[in-house]
Image (cartoon, rainbow, N blue to C red; front, side, top):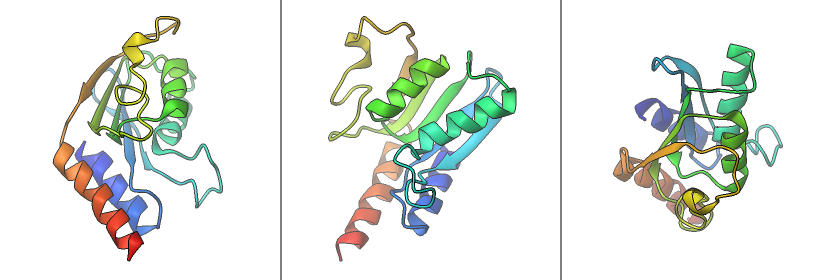
Amino acid sequence: MQLALEQAELAGRQGEVPVGAVVLDASGGILAATHNQTLDQVDPAGHAEILALRQAAAKVNNHRLTGAVLVATLEPCLMCLGALVQARIAGLIFGVRDPKAGAVLSRINVNDLDWLNHRFWTVEGVLAEKCATVLQDFFQARRK
């Protein structure tokens, strides 16, 4: 999570919403580490989670990331949830819930979506206070 936080802080310095994501392989090795880049890439799908999944898939030369774990500073949105399912990740670790758009536990509970063809385990709250502070500081500065 510390690496994801570093990525989030980098995003914030670049004017992007400070969300970072890391993909780990089944052994805990780093496959990808990145941050939100919707503005820089002029891409509505430029969320940290999507970009990290793309990098990891390219590294292993497979669109399926079976056994991989995604670590994100913020609970993924609905678009990112779909990508996590399509990538067939094993698990998700995230720092803080997103009460407005979180699609894993907050707005939609992934465990209630019995029609999904893939399931993954979830751990929330890792370094939650720091993840929340990075987001809060960014938006407070933006409002000034």
